[in-house]
Amino acid sequence: MKKTQTWRVAMALAAWAFCASAWAQAVPKPKEFYFDEDRSTTRPVVVVSGQGDAVVDKLATLVQRDPRAVEARVQLGTLAISGGRRELGDQLYKAALESLSTSSQQYRQAAWNYGWALLRAGDPEQALHQWIALSGGRPATPNWLPPTLALTLWKLDRKEEAISWFGAAARTWPDQWGDPGNFATLLPDWSDDERAALAAVLAAYQANPPAWP
Image (cartoon, rainbow, N blue to C red; front, side, top):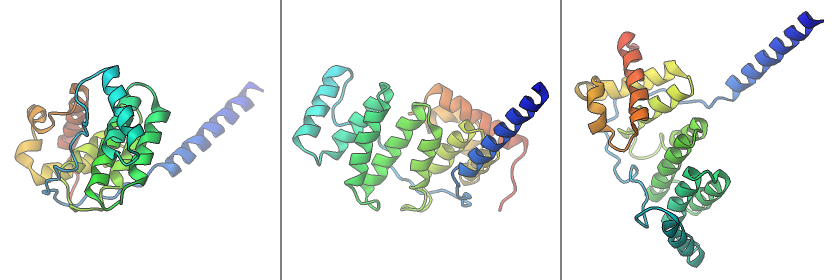
């Protein structure tokens, strides 16, 4: 009886794993180089400086007064997610993104910020969704994309893909991305843990660099 139950559990786990892998987001293969600067996308949205309830109150007032206050919604969404109010944060970001054209620069900035809020809230899968949506826009080869996707895929234990995406950064600027000592300068807004995770990707890449293409 116990043996039968064990097999049933094993089969259920196998089925779950198959479904999970089937639902894993498809990630495009990296291009050879990523030289394009994309500074207008990679800016944290800050409408009200500071911290604490006073900032939240000011942002909430801005949103209530003007439904088109997209940047206030984005910053408030980030604060909600980081403060453990994920549902509210998702609602604020969804409202902000739905009010923008997907081809607009403001949309790209909002989606980039949303991705980081999600990643730092422990949801790399949904962060990946936001950033993949930006991979086919303009600029075509943004330089932030390879290290960001490498980090996110590594956190999802999709290590082969993470190494492949890191390779795009290493091909583009081999003198910069070949040394983890450069990461603090290259990635000043990343946390120490995030840079350490990318250093692990670099080590795996150096141990067995994937061929291109």
